[in-house]
Figure 1 (spheres, rainbow, N blue to C red):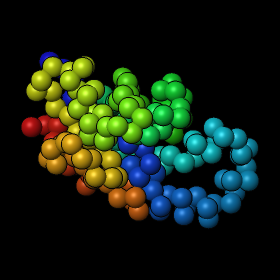
Figure 2 (figure 1 turned 120 degrees about the vertical axis):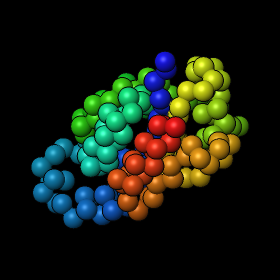
Figure 3 (figure 1 turned 90 degrees about the horizontal axis):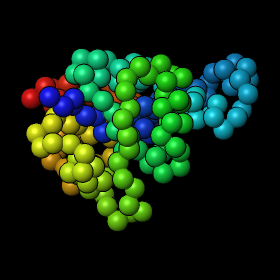
Length: 162
């Protein structure tokens, strides 16, 4: 049997307005670490959201496909390295196709599914923006304000357990 799939957005899922506000108030963290591009990217990921994602993957046996726009600017290996540095312990197996704006996020996910996965495999899209082109019952819509919450994780688990 194929493993369930989590299509993962990053901004608004693994970080949030709340995370950035807290980070801005932690001057000691900013001052103690060099301000490299990688360091800034790494610190943009909220470890608490990573732990929630880990829980989702551990409870369902799911793997991750990156559907975030980050895949257009960063190699998959760099994205994996960044999230692992923040505590990620799951498996990322690929990215959705990038069609230079001709497909919606949902269209990119559908294209990836048609090419790579047998029909009937459980999947969920976790994103902070509406994912058009997918059935709403397979989308977990997070908030840009909070990122991935415990409630979002429970909903994703229910979707993948059907």
